[in-house]
Image 1 (cartoon, rainbow, N blue to C red):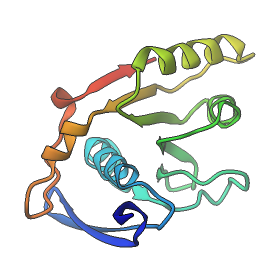
Image 2 (image 1 turned 180 degrees about the vertical axis):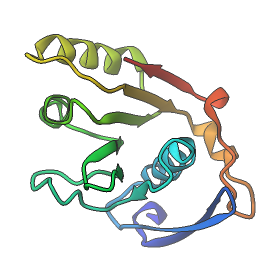
Image 3 (image 1 turned 30 degrees about the vertical axis):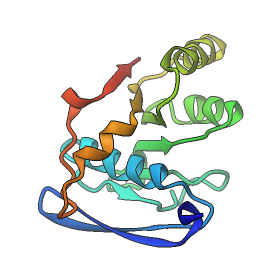
Image 4 (image 1 turned 45 degrees about the vertical axis):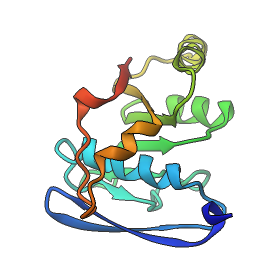
Length: 161
């Protein structure tokens, strides 16, 4: 029941405060994945934003997005459930965009097979990395009592294509 309640989370990434609101239909782990990705990719994409629309995209909304000065997507992050249709769409439409799919405590090989199969189906090759991160329940410990997000690349399961 408590996972269904609307909650406000306050986090700190590199000294900067981030407030995330958990929607009633959203799992708490979805909120954690978004803040973990923001922490992990913040060094590479300083303007990374959580839950903002990409102005050039009418079909889907990313969980995380970083754009260049021209508004082109440099990074697109998806957390949790994502359909095979959406995976294929993002991989083919955003071939120049660094994509990341984050999951919570799943069997990694099954998702990796999905990505491998989808890569083979693409008619055109990708020109940017595609990452997969599989967070675990114990990763919650990488948020301290003050809301500081402490996770780093050494603490998680990560694969890049």
